[in-house]
Length: 231
Image (tube, rainbow, N blue to C red; front, side):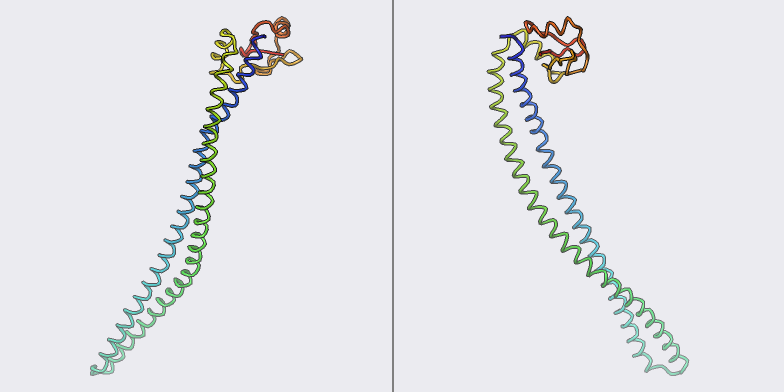
């Protein structure tokens, strides 16, 4: 048996291992992305709540301003009964009229703020519903990711055993070359195409190299990338 076939079988196992190892790295990142999505939904809800609170504060402030001025008008009217001249009485009326105009302005502000409260409350309800649904979706999805990660680890364990058995079938010289190359070349063993081009680096090989590959009696590396060639 030549050296290439056992290497191809080992490389096939290593390919599966590399794929699963990458998946094992990606799965936690996908969970992190889901956690970030929840954070964004939570932030949107907090913003809606802050906008609602601000609208409610504006309503309360306007109410206080109106009450304070009504109290002032009441005090002025009570004092009018003690006035001695028409001039003082008219001055009080002017002051009351001025305060009443201020009340109208604050009542207008209050109405605007109250109009803002309704959509703000609705926004909070909607965003709370979205967040709740998001939690349910993320919890279910993360459970799937955890289950998949457990499967990947099981598969990697099995592949580790299979690799150990496959390594035993490879000639030491071929294995040594393969292990050196795998650190910076993947795949290590590639096909020499019918036109004599290495499938790894797309370099056309000299006729002598192609002839050696066809014979398949010894390991033949690509003249450019060093990958092992087979027909």
